[in-house]
Structure formats: C-alpha cells, structure tokens
Image (cartoon, rainbow, N blue to C red; front, side, top):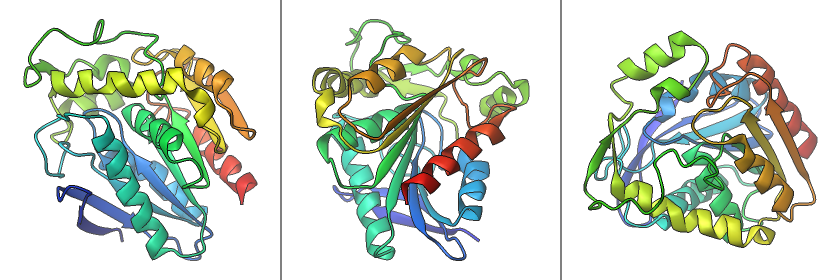
Length: 268
C-alpha cells in the first residue's frame, strides 16, 4: 500500500504525495508529472519500478490535483524546481545510502532538466520522457503570451497525449486532470527554457532521454537538441517510432518500462 501524505514545500505550500516502498529497495525514484495531470496517472509505471526494487515517491505539482496552490499557476519557474528539491531531500533523508533518480514527463521533464542544470550532482541520474526542453513546437504560440497572468485557457492537450483512444478518453474524463491552464504558468516556463537552451553544459548528470517520434505536444527535436548539447558523459537517447506524447501510457508501454528499468540497473 502506498503511503499518502501532505508534504510542506519550501514556501509552506502543502503538496500531496505518495510513497510506494519496495520490499528490498536498491534505489529510490522520484516521479514528476506533466502539465495539468497528476501522480495517479503513474500507477502502472510505479508498480513496475517497485517490482524492480525501487522505492517510488510521487507528488502532485503545485496547483494540480490534490496539492495546494492557485490552480495550474506559478509566478516563477523556480517554484517547480524548488518543490522537486524538497521531494528529493525527503527521499534522501528517508533512504540513506540508496541512489536517487528522477523521472520527469513533459513539464515534469522540464522540471527535472532544469533541476539537473541548477543542482548538478544532487541525484544519481535522470530519465526524461517527452520533456519540454527547447519549445521547438510552440504549442501555446510565441511566448510570452500577451494576456494577464491570471487569464485561463482551456486545456486542449488531450488529443495529442496518446495513440490509444482509451487513454485519451480517460484523460478527458479524469476529474483530477485540470481543465484550464493559466497564462501565468505558461509564460513562467519560458525563462527555464532559456536556461536549458543557453547553458546546456551545466547539465552533467547521467541521463536517459526518451521521446515519442509522433509526439504532437512537445517536439522530439527538443530531446535531440538537449541530448546533443548537454555535457553528461553518460547519456542515452531513444526515440520511439509511432509513439505520441505519453510514452508511459502507449499500447507498447511495457517496452518503455523495460528500457527505463534496464537503464536504472546499469547505473547502480
């Protein structure tokens, strides 16, 4: 059974989190979800990871699902990065001596990539899935958007998430998937993309970069560019033919899970 709790973040905001403990853990994984979604969509991945002897920490990003905060809103991208730092420090404190890895998808991949850029050597490695690291596909248009920060736009991401119609239907009907996204959050992501683009040499940790070739939301070129430019000596890139944005939810998701676990097993 997963342990559920509210975790106080760096500024006092409480984030909803879950901890799934492996029977004989040899590593720890922190999962960071994407824009407008929530930790519950990572149950199958979590189950695979715990079976592979990883204790898994997940949390709803601020303003998402069961976490506190103005809905799908941030004023500064560092809020996302500092939230992750609190989660990583919690995972480390509760699992002394075990290596810690971060898996981030989409905006969660952005959060993980910026975290690794700002805090190199803090964790043992990263797995990035469909990560927003370059904005090669301007899905929201040219940034910054010319609207007030507290303007909300409808969440129209659903059609691009997956090639499995059942996943799209579940996404659209999920009460914990946010139905609107603030301009404030969208615009706040831009400086982080500028950091990732302008200073890729600061990212030095081991990294597995994964992307669906048919991703309709985040261009696979983001991952190709990130992979080519970061200074990591241990880096692996895999582009999946025919898969869309949510490679962890595609029909062939087991292949992706196997690739992630194989990479983790090679690390330590």
